[in-house]
Amino acid sequence: MTKVIMHGCNGKMGRTITEIIAADEGIEIVAGVDSFDEEINSYPVFSNIELCDVEADVIIDFSNAKAIDGLLDYCEQRKVPCVLCTTGLSEAQLDRIKEVAKEAAMLKSANMSLGVNMLLKLLKEAAGILAPAGFDIEIVERHHNLKVDAPSGTALALADSINEELGNEYEYVYDRSARREKRPRKEIGISAVRGGTIVGDHDVIFAGTDEVITFSHSAYTKAIFAKGAVQAAKFLAGKPAGLYDMSHVIG
Ligand SMILES: NC(=O)C1=CN([C@@H]2O[C@H](COP(=O)(O)OP(=O)(O)OC[C@H]3O[C@@H](n4cnc5c(N)ncnc54)[C@H](O)[C@@H]3O)[C@@H](O)[C@H]2O)C=CC1
Ligand SMILES: O=C(O)C1=N[C@H](C(=O)O)C[C@H](O)C1
Image 1 (cartoon, protein in one colour):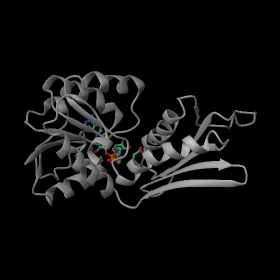
Image 2: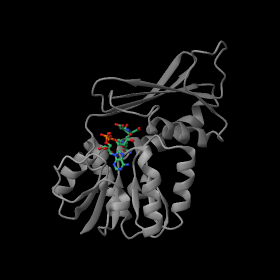
Image 3: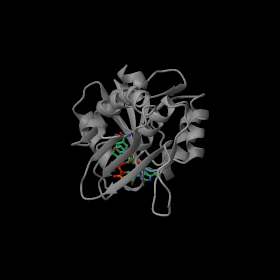
């Protein structure tokens, strides 16, 4: 039985994961952490990870960028593996994750769905063929009106996957409103739309002369992310220190 601390347990994703784990005999939540305590949980909830004295095999995190520094300190000191799903992290936090991964197993992924993780691979092949042939690359993401970070972590991960294939020569452009120039070839435009209850849509557009290819992923429920996170937690429990991602889980 894998024992989990759910970091951000009372948020939208924390609640979805609580439901999914309750129906799985191979894994249980032994404690939750959330600054917002509604007394709705069947497990003990702490307002801060530093106050959590419950032993666990792995942490699942869906919280807020502001909560990540304390979480990383906890993982480093106690050597607890962590599935890090919060997006909108700073460069300093991304560097710190690499440091902490020397002491504990850390799996970071901006999107836990099978579809997006397969797309990350497919895009490398597409970019390798289409970019040299002169296709422009644009990413458009759409999310619900409660999302606090933009662009989405997934949009950045999709861009990074493409850019890696292209020798990291492409610049990311988030806003063209102050620009008065033609589009340079080596850029990836990234646009964010926010509204209603959209769970999460990502379009990667390769626009060439007289033809356009669009790779599109739509999430219909948050359960696709929750299932991936639970699968990742089972995978990560007991793993040696190191930096992991969903490709290690999915294969
Ligand atoms: N990697 C992935 O597949 C996915 C990642 N996300 C990301 O996960 C994060 C959370 O998403 P949601 O659940 O939709 O947000 P949410 O706002 O509904 O939930 C976040 C929870 O974290 C809690 N929190 C805030 N500060 C905290 C602290 N210092 N310690 C403990 N808890 C704290 C809040 O009280 C809240 O209950 C976001 O960054 C989002 O972008 C969301 C869905 C999928
Ligand atoms: O905040 C969300 O909801 C989501 N966030 C992740 C992101 O920023 O990419 C993943 C998913 O799209 C939902």
